[in-house]
Image (cartoon, rainbow, N blue to C red; front, side, top):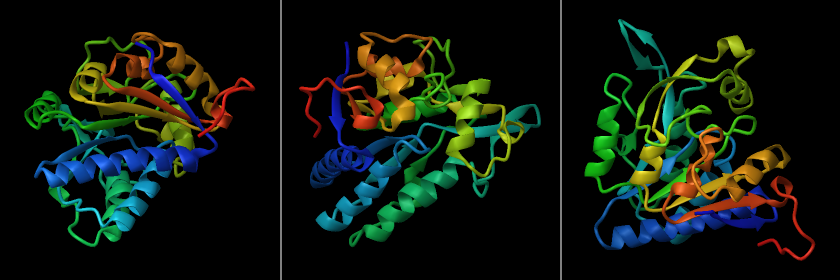
Length: 268
């Protein structure tokens, strides 16, 4: 089913709208004594959401100790016949991103209780299947923020050609994904420094474990991505971010720069 597209004036407006929805969900879960699982990508696209969410936490004095940050992926390196996640102090570590760009601002904004270190979840490359089990046991993800690779449509680290039934696993990263990540993590001086492997949730993980999914795409560089995901009526393996079409409660939040607007269409 084609995901609903909402166009905003700029990235800040798109981020604020999604952050407000997330804050509503956190508030409702807290009032009912439940955890709130937020699926999170790293990178540039969701940064306005995370900034706006911290502002919402401060403004509403939200109780966030029940929030679980569910990261989509991380880079891995070979280790004794298997793989391990890269060190959390590496500039490109997704764990580092989660702790410093999501959790730290939220905790700094909170006047009630912090998100504890046990509430930041990442897949273990030594036992990827355990991640799907953990999410299922937890009741699934309340809202999954999604982003699309601008040149190849990767979502998390799922490369073009990923089957719809894929689950959490270790993958070899497409060179197109690695090139995109030069912009995501500017500390990389060349593509040779970008790791070649990652551990990632799968397409079936995203579609099957989330109650709602919102893909956020802003900036002119995401025009191809928006055109692909906004017209997809089902998952298309050559552009994995079209998983949004297979998700429950699916939506696309884009800004004017990312979409060619008809004259009559108004921005939010």
